[in-house]
Length: 136
Image 1 (cartoon, helix red, strand yellow):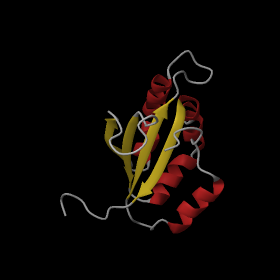
Image 2: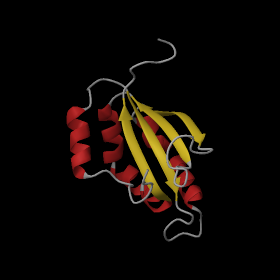
Image 3: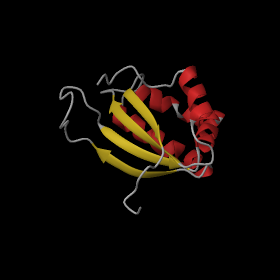
Image 4: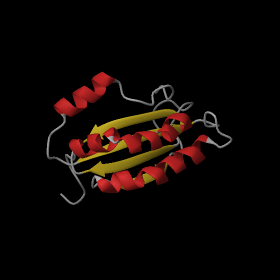
């Protein structure tokens, strides 16, 4: 797994997401996070600056009806590249992909998201829908 230099979606990835994601269907974003040791231009660790980002974007998340449903620290790789693995995984759910896009398009959100950019070595993001849940 190449956990570096992948922080932002390409324009094509965003276009494809908006075009292909089911409408009016909840979406859960799987965040695969690897911190920089020291955030760019800061005297803080990547983890500290990323946590500041999380705190500052919470109002934007709530505004669009989103919520974090799970966060976990990665202990180790069991299958896969043992030398390069993420620090944390986050699951954030939104009522629909349109709600997610509305949040990331917000100019104030984009200012707060600078902390995400400067704090991460890798910030993978997977858009998912529910095929099965434990309550099914």
